Length: 254
Ligand code: PGA
Image (spheres, rainbow, N blue to C red):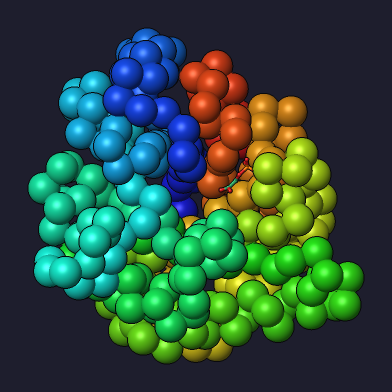
């Protein structure tokens, strides 16, 4: 049985001060709760340390939004897996469409990053998703399958234990437009079946597939109720402690 994972992708929002305020508020809302839902927050690099400190005696984990695939060296502006681990990070988001679109994260680069992060003991939230024109042309399944294949071809069956996939249709990210529960379920099932074709391992039963793209308290329940939706990767709504904790509450009851 897969437990639900609710992850907040803060994107380029929340410096250390803001992170402290937001996370203290979240912590207060989650006090004395014995959560069955796994919760992760992914602030910008500069706020990771603060997040780890504020959340130190809670079950909420901290993740980064990117990482480089080398350990150290002449890579100006980059951060390594070891640095993240030293900071207390346990998760990393990789392959987000904003990084694919704006920062040269090709399938090949993402595959290297995922492999490195898993090898160094991080939990990876690996994002895939089609653009609007790809969906309109009926190519959404092929696009997502190619994105997944490029990465899982580089992984072993054991790596599966550290892999979470986030299906995020690009047309639903930050637009207020959400995939319908039926569209989400169809894609999640497609992804799960594709993984099963690739790997035979029992461990696949534990691989979580999150939905991302304008998930908020108003639509979280119908999405999270879908059989193959195992959680959410939440952008905008994760920046408000009330909305984020409401989504966690919904996850607890579905
Ligand atoms: P959104 O972002 O919830 O603001 O649409 C989701 C994401 O990009 O991970």
